Image 1: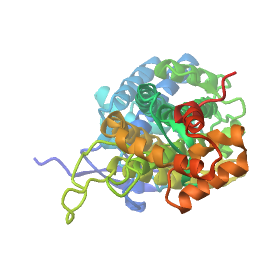
Image 2: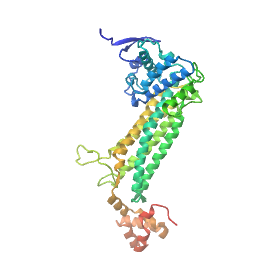
Image 3: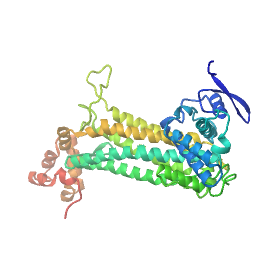
Image 4: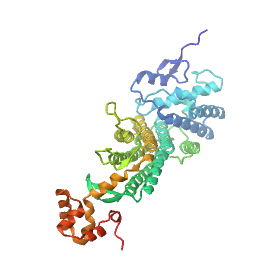
Amino acid sequence: MATPAFRIDKDSLGEVKVPAEHLWGAQTQRSIDLFKIGVHRFRFGRGVIRAFGILKKSAALANGELGEISPEKVDLIVRASQEVIEGKLDGEFPLVVFQTGSGTQTNMNANEVIGNRAIQLAGGVVGSKKPVHPNDDVNRSQSSNDTFPTAMHIATVEEISAHLIPAVTQLKGTLDAKARDYANVVMVGRTHLQDATPIMLGQVISSWVAQLEQAIAQIQHALGGVLELAIGGTAVGTGLNSDERFGDTAARYIAKETGKPFVAAPNKFAALAAHDAMVNVSASLRTLAGALMKIANDVRWYASGPRAGIGELRIPENEPGSSIMPGKINPTQCEALTMVAVQVFGNDAAVAFGGSQGNFQLNVYKPVMLHNVLESAQLLGDACISFDEHCARGIEPETKRIQRNLADSLMTVTALNHHIGYEKCAKIALTAHREDLNLREAALKLGFVTGEEFDAWVRPEEMTHPSKK
């Protein structure tokens, strides 16, 4: 006898045909059928699925500790949730991002899958809701309104801590080593896209390192707000239908499971109605994106050419750059990093707008806010690793070009300011520029200094730090 392709599942609205091979139930299936919007799913990075596994496991343990459900049910839910955490049931989470704004369908997806897997573990019939019920047991003491934002925070903290911060730290380390390696390479400084006084290449790169250090610190600070969880607020923040100890108890189990210092939010009303902590995290990711945009653009401008550009840096030649121009090589890692930055800027705008749309006791832009924060974190982490491995590690100075550009620079005349004054220095620079002379030739022609004085006073390497007394 052939296995039936579908089973009949029920929810409060009636019967629904569900594919027999899957563990999800009626509410998940309704969402599949009703929200055919886009391709983005919460399997993205699997962080959200893992977060729901952690949440449901911790909720079951808390309910067991508080005497809300039997030890037998706790064991079944914990075992099923552990499989979700470990990624064994990822195929059972098919829902798209663009669904109900509270994330109710994703919460019910987790409840149904964990409930049915628990039933399987007990030797029961999938879809029977016995001995474990998706609402009464898996969702005990919870509402989608507090579980989804709790999962938001768990997923965000884990993704940023495990992927993004290590990736940025790795890139920062590479650049820090480069800054030390090239600490004595003197080059032309540039302001307003015009020549300026000399600077060390190591100093240039050290500014990139400092930007990344500051960005990491801002992200870590922003994560502090996301450590507060909405769990225990249930529907509108009042904690209706839950033990008053449930939020703190569940948060304690979540902290133990993740190794992160999660706590129940002191004000559950704000935790459901507003997501300012997520907005702050997104803003910190935007700041990092801006820093990476600056670094990538500096690198590709310094490496531009190779003949008609600045050409003061060499970067790895990774792949052919043109289908028509033989031998052309492009700064593709820089381009990829800047495109990621642009995407993050857009994601942050969506998160900021979504965060502003909390009405009364609930913000209903939760899924899109979560998706954009996680996408930004993952893209930035991936891009930092790629840029580090395929570009930053191979950065080298093009010494001859650096020295030639430095010798041609007019702004080394600034070294004469203290000796002959600003007005005479300006006349030397403008004479050199207009008559196509070098600075030394112009200074001697005007008679403002002797050759010996010019050579003693105009020393580019001594112009890269404050005067020594």
